[in-house]
Amino acid sequence: MMSASNLVRIVEVGPRDGLQNEPAPIPIAAKVRFIDQLSLAGFPVIEATSFVNPKAVPQLADAVEVMHTIQRTPGVRYLTLVPNERGFERALEADVDAIALFTAATEAFAQANVGTSIDGTFARFAPVLEQARDADMWVRGYVSVAFGCPYAGAVDPDAVASVAERLWEAGCDEVAIADTIGSAEPEQVATVTARVAEVVPMEHLAMHFHDTNGRALANVDAALAGGIRIFDSSAGGLGGCPFAPGAPGNLASEALVAHLEQLGYETGIDRDQLALAVGEIRLALAVARGEGA
Ligand code: MG
Image 1: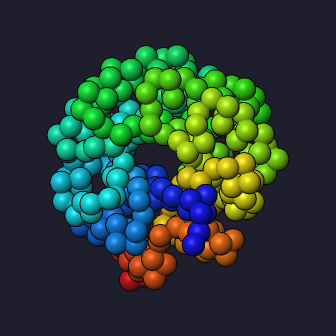
Image 2 (image 1 turned 90 degrees about the vertical axis):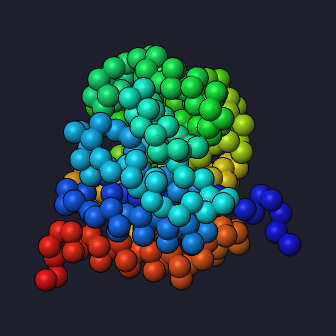
C-alpha cells in the first residue's frame, strides 16, 4: 500500500487557463463536454472557467451558463476565477463553491496585468474573500510570476514567500505558486518551495509550471523532492505562454500523469479517459478554428 505522501493531487486547468486565450469562439457544448470528460477522468479539482469581464475575455462570457450546464460530480471541486466584486456576483449566480483569486510576486506584473499594486490586488479581493468565507466557499490564491517576470526579470524568493504568506493569512485554503513565463529552474524551485513552505503549510501549497523552456517536469521533480503534492496541468497542454507566442505554456496533464506514475506516485487519473477528453477538445478546437475542412 502506498503512503499518503505518494498521492499527488492534480488540478486540471485546461477549461479555463487552456481555453481563455483561444481566439476562435468555442461552442458552449464543447466546453461542457470537455469539463464533464475531465470529471470522468478523475481530476479532483477542475478549473472550469473565469468570471472576468466578458468584454475583456469574450471566450469566457458564457461562464455562468457553463457552470449551470456541467454535470457536477460529487467529490470534484469546480474552481472558477474571480477577479473582482462584479465577478463574484456572477460566481454566486452560477452557484460555484470554489473560487480562485490572483495576485503577483512583482509590482511590475501586478501593474501591467491588473493595473494596480500588489497591495491593490489584496484590497480589491478583500471583500470577495470575506463574502466567499461567509458563503463557505473554498478559496485558492495564485501568485503569478513567482520564478521570473517578463517586466521585472529575476524574482526574489522572499518576495514570493511574502505574497504567499499574505494569501494564506487572508484566509485562502490553498496557495498556488505559478511559473507564468516558464523560466523556472529546478534549483530555484527547490529554494522557493522551501521558503514558501515556511509560511504556508505544505499540504496547502500547489505549483503551476509551464513547459515553455522544456523544464516543467524537472521542476515538478524538484518540487516533489521538497514535499509538494499538488500540481497544476492542462489537458493536451492547452494554453500557450502569453509572453512567448507559439511556445508551449501549460504543462500537459497526460505528460504529468505519466511522469508521476512512472515515479511510483498515485494520481487517481484514468489515462484512457483523459486521452478521450484531449482528443475531443482538440477536434472541437480544430472545427472552431476552421482547420482540417
Ligand atoms: Mg498557466
